[in-house]
Image (cartoon, rainbow, N blue to C red; front, side):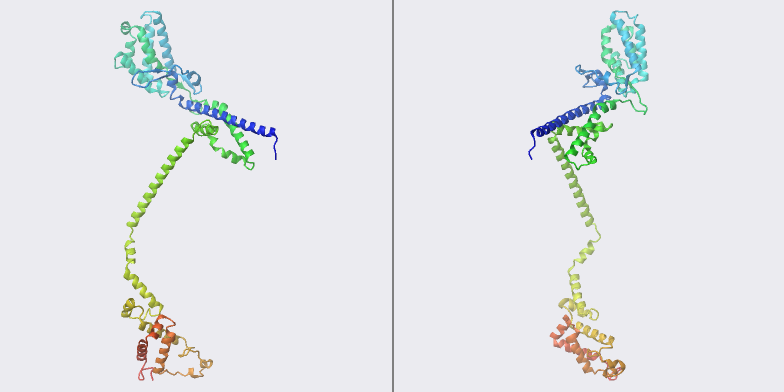
Length: 461
């Protein structure tokens, strides 16, 4: 379907508008990140923002002035609840009252009262330590060390009284002493401050108001617009899923842990094509993958070593070694054919040893088969010795089966011979071996005849 030109132009304009909006929000987020970093580091670096100079070597009185930087402390101190300390402010005002008459050419006698007042404030400052409230106790030690070095005196209080006394001021002009006080002492005294406490017992901080009004409101509007655009692009997407897809923007709305905003800010700047973080991402990915691979290799190596040690120290090694011996496997293989042929209980130890060397024992197999057949004939009264069933009348005492007749030895031997050669083996290896060797069968028959009772014995003819 052909679309009108005005529709295509409107869509292109809309896409460009959204592109400009995304870039503007990305830049605004970058400005917010810089402000957050300034807020986090303002308290530790307040001395730097107040004096606007650098001291590369703290032990050496070398100062690098940075006069191009603006003085931001009068503007940002109220945001953090910082107020000038009363004692240090009184000290600075006392020095100004002393400095003015001496610069105008007044005598030492006329400024004696101001000098005694300044010495008393110095002693009070050393005793009370107003720098402890702001966590800058080291600043007081710097002041004391510089007073000692200037006056060559081990006591800081006596050094202050010596530097403001008449003998010292008569030896050196006030211009030199004024330069010392203004460059070495007063800037350190001015760093002391007092910070108010809110109702929750925490130091006062009003930065959240600036952050909420100027930045978080814009970020919330941008997230809402992104959700609307996403739902237009994917109509089946719910509001909750659309919000979850923008989870990376969550630090922009948190009133705490503001340093975490670096992640969504970098993501927005990268999407707006204002910065390129692909080389950094690739380097970080390779570093993480290499660390994970190294850890995984170490874990696998340790598991392999532990498994090998446990296997070597196992108490099952003797049993495993004995199970691999050859004569036990041969003995186990020789017992299984004998049991299968039915000669597992009646063969002699000599026959068992011969079976290990040359296979199954024919005599034992045939004798075992004969005993099983004879036992089966005794257990089944309904079957005759010839293997057939008795007539129905034999159960009532009629027929030839009812008379208790004994078989003759020759007939029994012949029957045993037939059963051994035909049915006793049951198609087994022992029966086939007996049929293949007639001499063995005759010896078995003779042994069966010898076991039959004689005429004079009980049960014989």
